[in-house]
Amino acid sequence: MRKLIEDAIRQIDDMRALDGICGKAAGLVNRATQPELIKNTLSGTWLGHALHPVLTDLPIGAFVMASALDATAGRAGATAARRLIGLGVLTTVPTALSGACDWSDTYGPTQRVGFVHGAGNAAATMLQAASWLARKRGRHGTGVALSTVSLGLTVCTAYLGGHLSYVRGIGVNHTAFQEPVTDWTDVASLSELSEGSLHRVTAGGVPVVLAVKDAKVYALSATCTHEGGPLDEGKIVDGDCIQCPWHGSVFRLEDGAVERGPASVEEPSWEVKVDSGRVFIRSATAS
Ligand code: FES
Image (cartoon, rainbow, N blue to C red):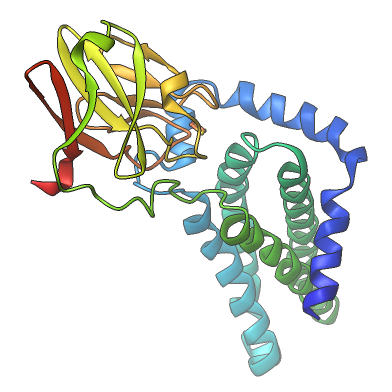
């Protein structure tokens, strides 16, 4: 079973024929989500972690409950099941929008798997919408059959969604496993740093970016929480923030707070002290 699934995913990985449509669709989504409010809303920047996995519970929960009613209550539960399906179809809209926003920042094989995940979910939703219509017109048996097929498809697409998160790390905090460094660590000479530029150092094995702004030294972990982009290759923007070079997330130098998504988790920040011309840092959580 496991081998079968792994082979199927490998085949999707190799479907280079999807790249044309993936590139166009991702470009469209990227343009549509360019405004900061839209990007932050759909990415979950306001929530503290990705929004998409939260929303997926709504349609999946509604569809599963509708099928449970079909199986256990028959026609007695027909009205409730139809309402659940209607609710499920409606809630696929924000769910799909947040998923598309996350997907638009992926590349290569991961983007292909994400595309199949999204296309499968679109097909499953259309089947549920057809089921709702059939039930509304009194064709209960057809509605149940359509919902059942749709749910089977949803199980497959949900597997792909889980694979994207738990195997490929899409939507997870890429600094989650960084251990706090509690001791003050000598990382650089103050004379090596210059106003407005970024400087990569390492403390306790953790990459850290140093920035000097208005003669004050700031330090943030250099691995972007979004997808691991190198913040030290980014740039200082808006006077007191750093922008990731990969997908443009913006973090405040002062405390690592996310000013603009797609990142939804703040960047770990570090305390800084300068002593005898040397720069020392430790994790902000260490004090
Ligand atoms: S890696 Fe995506 S914004 Fe930094």
